[in-house]
Length: 236
Image (cartoon, rainbow, N blue to C red; front, side, top):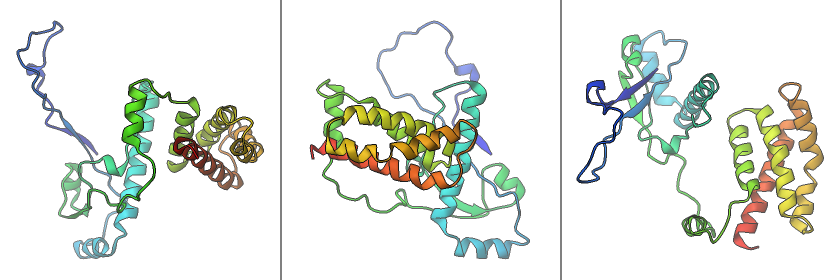
């Protein structure tokens, strides 16, 4: 169930012509609310309450995010709009898990619910990386984003979303880009060891979802590429 909260009324929307403004005040923005509803109902409120008390909340959250991302992917394809993006739980304003009657959940409401902590994944691990500094360097033109970086990120997103065919094809292009970046280096030789397995997975993906035996090889390849890029960022 998708709904928009705080959407501007059509009568108040501006026309086609630009209008003068005296101050650049922040514009109120609408909030989208997605309610993921199980297909099977609980026999009673007592059983629903017992389920909520014992539920693995993080697993339920991750499952709901996966369902929502499948819907967003479908919208992206249906609208042929490449800018329909996916979401992660950490980017949500609020994550609640609960239960309610049919009318309640259809309206995005619940009878009983719990709200997960803003960063339910736990404390962020300390790292030698300084993304803020690199962000400034990229914006200032002192560094450039290599295509391999973006391609590896896309492969990781496809893997995490359970899209093995897309992951295999993205990984195939990513490994070639990264091998060019790391050519004539020990890191390049390490990444090259994954090339044959990635190629096999990508070729299988052209005929349909690659068989399960390719899943581990893709995960290993993407993890190796992520580590290689991290070492390069750190100058190691």
